[in-house]
Length: 350
Image 1 (cartoon, rainbow, N blue to C red):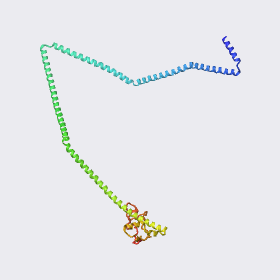
Image 2: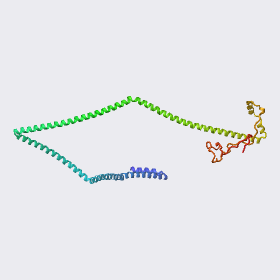
Image 3: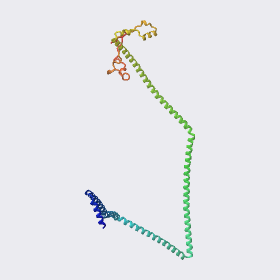
């Protein structure tokens, strides 16, 4: 009845729906039923095949564990099999040790029994002896006891004498060693106390002697350096004087060139040159001469010799090396190139 009522309600609900609504409802119900079936199938698969998979996994785990135990057991069996001779030897050793202990125990027991029997036999023999035999035995034992005592005393006396002799010898050795040590200490103390003053004086003298030698050698070195510096200063002075002379000659040559240039550029330059300048007037007034008698030396058209005329040319084989190896500082020799001599009139002679 309830189902019939539900069906009638569904028919009434679907009866008023359109076709698109019915298709949409059909899709929704199909999707819900598909998801529900998929959920049920997944649950059934887990319940059915999951248990089997877990069982197979557990079987594999157990087999692997059994294999490990079997491998371990096989390893132990192989070790025992390969070392069987050693195991047998160890067992034999234990057995022999037990037998040896048993034999030692029996030997000790037999020894005790033999000693007890000897004591019993000696006691029975002493009991069977007569009075004279007992007295004789007592004398013999007393004699033996006395001999043993004498022998023991002699041995003790010999050991005591040897010990005393060794003690005295060791005492002499130690005493001599102590005396040697004392004498060595005294000599060291004597050297430190009484000879320290002399050693200090000798050390001071040696120090002063070494300082004097060092100072003399230093002074000799400084004197040698001073002589070298003096020689270098002399050479430099000669070079500077020669350079000054050459410079003066170069300035004279340049002045002559300037005068010649002025004469070429300015026709009245010769008159200006011969005119009295302010410097010449001051010089003549300082000398006390009459400026009216001023007269410059006549102009010489021949230029003075150029000191650098041979600079840059290859030096001749017979010429000197010069000063410092510089061509413009070389002093001309007889075979070298010299400056032409000048006459009193200022002209150069060939």
